[in-house]
Every structure is written in C-alpha cells, then in structure tokens.
Image (tube, rainbow, N blue to C red; front, side, top):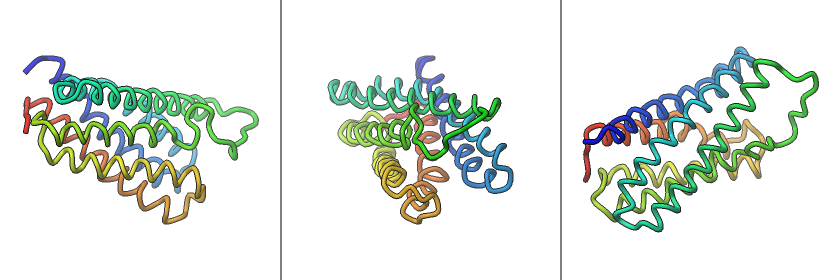
Length: 201
C-alpha cells in the first residue's frame, strides 16, 4: 500500500459524498430555498470535481497495466470532465455569493454547456475505465459493472439536459436521480475503499 493510493482512496470517498450532497442540494434544497440550494450545489460540485482528479489519477495507475493507451484515454476524459465540473461549480458558486445585476438564465453555461464535461465526458471516462477493470484483475469486478451503469446514466443525463431541457421531465429526472443519489456516490466510495485497502480483484 503506497501513500498516494491511500490518499486517493480518501479523495474518492470525499468525491462520492460530495456528489450525493450535490444532488440533495440541487434537487431538494432548491425547492425550499432556491438561493441556498444553488450555492450549496455549486460548492459540492466544486469539491467533488477537485477530489475526483486524484481518485481518477490513482485509477489510471491501476488500469494502465491492462492497456496503457485506453487507460490514458480514460484519464483524459476524466480529467476534462473534472476540470469542466470544477469550472462549472466555481462559476455558479461565484454567482451565488455575489449575484450579477442581470442574469441570462436561459443560455447554457459557457463553462460546461448543458453538463458536457460534468456528465458527458465523465460518463465516457467511467465506461472506458470500467472496461479496463473488467479486463484486468486490478480492482473488484463489481466496480466495473457499477461503472458501466454509472457511465451510461451520466451520458443519458447529459443528453437529457441537451435535448429535453425540461427539468421536470421523467426522461431527465430518472437517470439524473438514480445516478446522483445512488449509483455515482456508491461507485466513488467503493473505489475509495478498494484503494485504501489495496484491494485488487
């Protein structure tokens, strides 16, 4: 067990918890106190994105022995998704703390249009990493199965935000709710525990 993997495990757990709290803030808190919910969601999105960078870097170190090229591709997708999510969270947090005088809320965010990075690129990263976990004995195989589900739900969430737009549509709420409240937090926490314990298959 090296210190980087152990530290990355804790980062993955923080990312999972932050992802769950982001969903709680964005879906539930905003219904009661919109400004508070938006601010908390932005904060947890930023925290989760920053912590996921180290977690995904450790995952890359584990999976590069299976296929270095695909592992690097997955890492690049993951880092692009994490950086995009961090910018998205930071932008929304800045606006929540100091609201602009005028805001055009009907335009997609230039930082992360319709969640391209937060959901789309992150989903591609998880699908690719999951394939590598499945092929090699580098982590528990169940993590690959859950990763496939998470990656697919992330991409469906992005497509829903891109095409459907209606936040109350079941086509958007179903994948986003399942992913945000259950699948993605569990995947990150499971990854974190596996890294901390030094577990492989």
